Length: 318
Image (tube, rainbow, N blue to C red; front, side, top):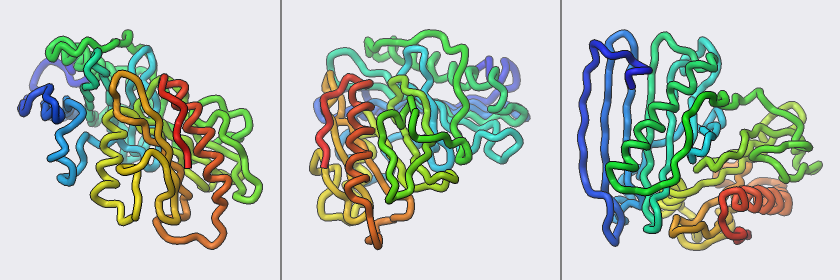
């Protein structure tokens, strides 16, 4: 954190609750906040996973990653992690604020540690390629210490020297030729799908492919969730779904009239990966002329490629 906030004039608060381990989930919850007046704030959370089922229904299980207006990008360099922001444009209100997360899959026991760092720097801009790695290195350095402290034995990455900028809404490209998170996803004439916003693939615990029309206007969104993020997404559907059958109950299916999901078993006792496709013009309501065949085809292609990259089994699709 010194590289981000400096050495002097900082205020630190911290707390540690719960324990890492147990047959019914791990309750470990570590929080630390460092504030430097006039320079910014860094908040760190270390969460053990999976959580006890008693926590389901009490809110989000893990610190949320911004992914509504921008697409989070992978940390890379051998880490399973993300860099995310609400807005990545220089001078915009969200500039200088970022969330970095790193997932440690502990050796041989199906448990993991999720490290999340939320940073606000008043004078910094994410548009500066020198700034982004310093955000991320706070998370990777914390992950290294957490791995040793809780005897996780995870595969660690290398020093992070560069990180991509999260992808904004207007940064779309032709879907044909996509080579990242949208690779292999087909176009669709009926649904007017011909463009994509995507990120690189690098073992990130969350992946997004946003599909659009020729002018970039949104049509569909494909999401992949791994580890704690898959657990949290299923827990959200368990308590908030309002549907007959949900991802919490079956490996694949249809969410009412608005979406489909798929699932894949992953190695070393990790939670089943979750893949979702949702039309951007749907919020649970029936649509006049849904292109259901395309939605299933897009989900199948997206899930298969993502699962392969993560070493998971062939997905079960609707």
